[in-house]
Image (cartoon, rainbow, N blue to C red):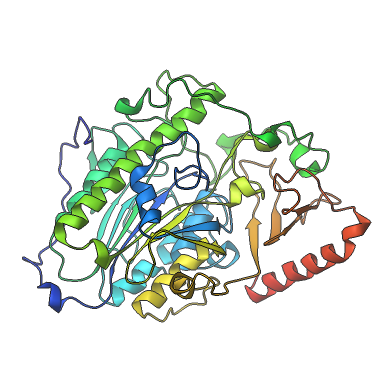
Length: 470
């Protein structure tokens, strides 16, 4: 389970807390472990119904806690979504609006985040993994312990910033992050701790650990039912844009891509390698459970597992795309375990958002945020599965210089309806009845039968923008 080659320098956890306090002297707040994966859609777990993938340890979080069946991100893109998790705000407020490099490093050093506020409230805080808001790997405010890397990082033999010291490490990124997580958890902690574990997996270039190289061999990639969408109702998706010279776009130049080291680039192998990358993440979750159980801290720890955005694997003719407002991009897994609050083996049907994580943890710990937050605490919903949460939500995407094909959009979604508005494109808006058309194939925007519904959704979109300062 552990990586074959290890970083030549061990994880130096800078702690000087001695042997720790007795359990009865601990503060009443629980420990918190927040696990974030990259580019993983809601249906890629065994517990959420995937027919192939094996994720017993991640599934355990939901089996002993709760699964949110309708969890979404407000922007299906790495940097904006990550900032929304941390702040509880929409991108139009926290200003991390895209993945372009321009200014993101500076902005992400200025964000008021829930780790920052929990640290002020007495928590010991650790960040381990991918930051990806700005290109630098330096410690952000609010973290006592910091392990991260530049930009996307590497699956193989990464250079990692460990509490301010950059080290060339040998091994597989996910295994390294898992081991550093275990090292932190094994330490004695005088305070309750917040551990933010942010995996590079399951992002491209989809390089699995060598031991998982042939996992799921014999399985086939089957195009989804919406793969044959003729896009007649999606003119925005049919648009073309002239190629951009990425080397000349100031502040937006992407970093060189890590190669796939000879692994095939067929759709089938990409799809399977995406799943294979998740296997080492799942092993790490198992290691977390093991350490917490041995230390007697499992039930005193809230564990949250989620993803920064979904992903399209053939839906609407798009393979490896996430910059669109369709369900496969917006929906993410969200699993929570904390027995003091959550009845085991339960599900939540309410629409939960990534901006809900920060206010949930503020509520759980008893912290008053010093900034406006747009999300809502999930604590009432965790206590009572029937508690109301929201009837609609706003999602948004802002133009990126490196991907001009994807236009800016703003979306309002209810439990049944979705309206997609393209502010810069005339006559390209979309309307879907998710109850009768869950695959989002029939655009009803021009249907006279739904004019009243469209007017209501337009009004709700305006209302949500106004309420959140958008």
